[in-house]
Length: 109
Length: 114
Image (cartoon, rainbow over all chains, first blue to last red; front, side, top):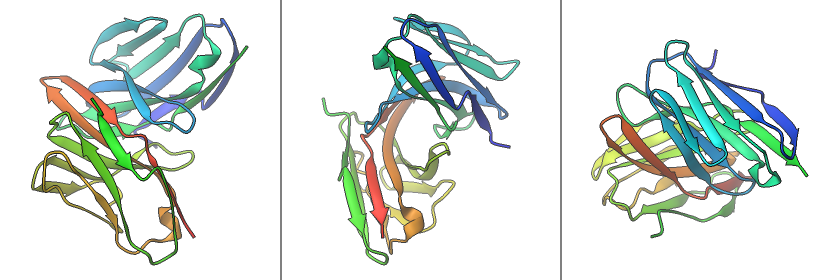
């Protein structure tokens, strides 16, 4: 069983739809990160969470430490949101990450 | 402010050849790491460094060497390339302040070994 799992693996949405990507993990963590990877491009960090909820523009990330679960929501999705979204957890001991397999999102106009 | 600079962006190697992937950061971060990304799998840690002169193995270190002679640079060496090393490689640097960690990634190197 992978330490970090994501669902769905692939997601196609129409422009304007509300999108949810889920992440569950099985290890103790000090923080969880949501990352975005555009096709052919690098990886950028969207959020770092250790508890609660964070919002940045149309993106909202939540984490439930007790349930070992996090969600990334995108409101009013747009084609430019098309990317792979990666959940990564940081263990309790240092700065190493364990990554989920990613969710490929396509937003159609 | 360049962030994390990775070179080259693309590379094709023949089996048995060696090469070095370059990674440099200008943020004075102590922690740097190399990951490989394969289809259907999450990024996996190859090697990491917590500061100049200190390196350690990650999850998939075989076939790779690293060194950290300066804070800025963290090159990854493939000693004798194998087709199994065909992958996309990412270098990252990060800093932590208490529970807060900020991570920065390079643009990636797409390596094909034929």
